[in-house]
Length: 345
Image 1 (cartoon, rainbow, N blue to C red):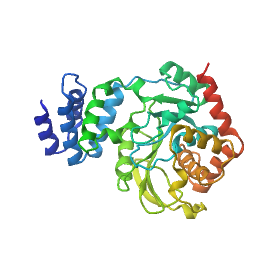
Image 2: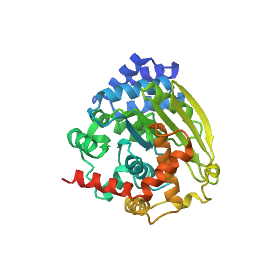
Image 3: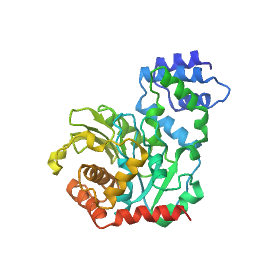
Image 4: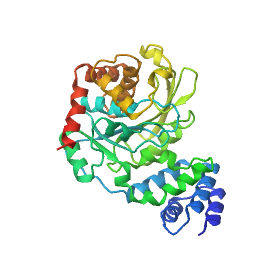
C-alpha cells in the first residue's frame, strides 16, 4: 500500500496485530520515502494510538531486535523515562539504577542519547567514563558479573535506521509519533519488571496497560508534577505523582503525595542541568554521599518504585529505607564503580 492507503486505514480505526505487522514492514522498507512514512505516522498520532496497537507494535519491533540472553541473574528490572517533558533534569533513572542494583535487584537498562534533553541516559554514562557500545556478548557478561548492564538502543534495533528519517520529518511537521513513546517498551533483555516515567498526566493508565500486554509481570507508569503542576516524566518529590501499576493482570491507579512520605519542599529548578557533564557530577555527588538534598530525594523515590515492582516490598516507607541504605552504605557507589571497571576490561 502507499501512504494514502495507510492513512485511510489508520484513520478508519484500530489495526489488529496483523495490520500492525504489515504497517511495520512498510515503515522499515528502505524504498518507501521518509515523507510518506511521516505522513502516515502523523495521521496515526492525530487519531490516537490504542493500547492494543502500541503493544502489538512494541512486540513486533522487539522481535526484530538483536537478542540478549542471560541466565543465572533472576528477574530483571528496567527504569527509564520516555523523555519529552522538557524539564532538562539530571539523569534520575540512571542514578536510581545503581541504587536498585546495590539493593540486590538485577538491572538491564535500555536507552539512547538525548533527543529532547541535553543529557540522555547514554550521554551521561559516556560522561562518567562508561563504555556505551557494549554488544550482546559484553552486555550479557556484565549483567552476569555485576547485576547491571546498559543496552545502547542503536546497537540492538537495526530496523530503526529506516524509521529515524520519518521521525525527523514528523518533528519538522510539529507532530510526535508513536515512537516518542515506544522506546521503553523495546528492551531486548525483556525485563520482568519496569518503571517508566511518561510526560502526560493522562498517560499512565494507558501505558501501564501496554506494559502488561507486553508481558511484564509487574510495572509502574508514572507522571509527576512540578510545584506549579506541570508534568514531568519521573516520580516527583515536589508535587503529586499519578501512578498506574500493572500487577496480577490489572492496572491500579493512585496518586502518590510526596509530603505524606516526608519529602521536604523544593522546586523543579533544583534538578536542572545544562550538560551531560553536569548530570554526571550530580550523580557522583548523590552516590558519593556529598549531596543529601532534593536530588538525592528524587533518586531515592524513583529507586523505591523500582524496588517495589521488583518485589522487595509494597510499603513505600519500606522500599524508601532500602534505597537510602543502598546509598548511605556506599553500596550504590561501589556498584557504579564495579560496572564501569568491568566494561573497561
